[in-house]
Amino acid sequence: MARSSSGIVAGLTVAALAVVGFLGYQASASAPAHPAKAAPPVAAPSPVPSAHAGEETKPVAVPNASGTGSRVVYSVSLKRVWLVGEGGQEPKSFAVKPSTAHPKPGTYLVNSRSGAVTGSDGVPIEHVVRFATADGVVVGFSARVDGEMPEPDANKKTGGIRMTRTDGDAMWAFATINSKVVVVP
Image 1: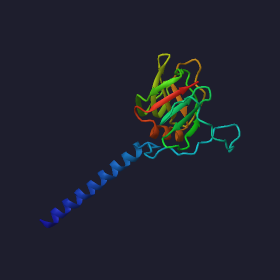
Image 2 (image 1 turned 60 degrees about the horizontal axis):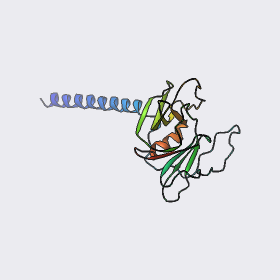
Image 3 (image 1 turned 180 degrees about the vertical axis):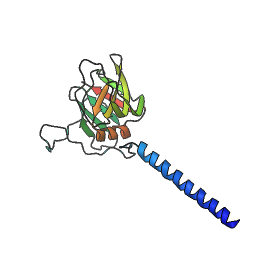
Image 4 (image 1 turned 30 degrees about the vertical axis):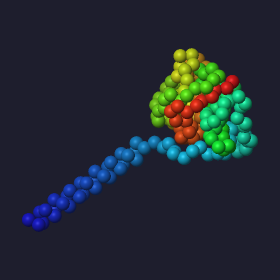
């Protein structure tokens, strides 16, 4: 009898290990390539994409009349975002590709977020931070999963203000529900 019970225990152990291995594989296969980071955004500004690869740029000052305190500042004309924290830290700033629907200048609050969805242009996106509506279209910050940042189709109303995946990670960590977003011209 002892042989038979040890055979059953060994069989159950092998089966349990197989299930754990399979579940581990499933978890790794469905995990996002760039999980959200809990750390605050890096204080140093990210370089602006330019025609001259490797060219360093100087930090761009936060626009005047963009409010005070912790906030996201979005300049439509400069095609740039600043993540302004508390305590005099150097804000993180980066270039973005504006959508075709632009929110009016003013102060908004982040009203919803999604980890991963399909954008209004039909492209898979991640770290979506929504804060406004313009021309009947929901407007928010996001990064394309494929890492591309093409110009939006001028013939379509889209609300996705696109950024790199790295900058999208920083936005996701910084701009939680009810965070202030200030839009300037």
